[in-house]
Amino acid sequence: MKTKLLALLTCFAMTLSARAEENQDALSFKVESIDGEAVNLEDYRGKVVLVVNVASECGLTPQYAGLQSLYEKYGDKGLVVLGFPCNQFGGQEPGTEADIKQFCSTKYSVTFPLFSKVEVNGSGAAPLYQYLTSQSTKPVGSGKISWNFEKFLIGRDGQIVNRFSPRVAPADAELLKAVEAELSKG
Image (cartoon, rainbow, N blue to C red):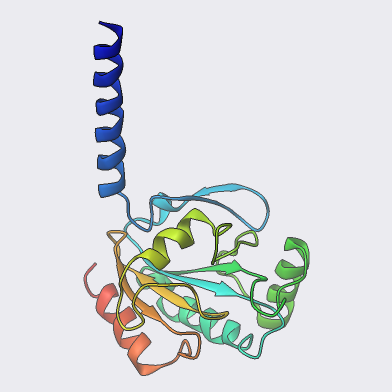
């Protein structure tokens, strides 16, 4: 009887786990803000979200200015930019969270949400990035993050709409078209 009950409970647990994975989307994760506070990405449901892995000492770091401009231009229409510092590419984000926050606010007047430093590739990748990189999304597809400033556009429903390579600037026509298309759905 115990064996049968254990088998039933195991089956039930596996079913619940499979259903949870089926219902998972890009906003199903909890992350930590740059100030160390827990943030439930579910709070951004209903907004169009641009998730970007960022770095302070990269040739692409000036994209912070473009990301801030996007945030200012489309924020009142429902866009939010989320910056996730990462030191996995050439050690280009070596500072502490306090250093990163200070750099972003002083050098680029960043007001969009920033989060604690994360890994985006490998076995230590943050669960959010494990999910993002596992999805086949146009135009980049699935697979590991190639460099700093790779961008994921997430619709109001939490589904990944687009993935843009690091060299696609925030003001790129293709990215702007995608952002505007998602914003028009709301």
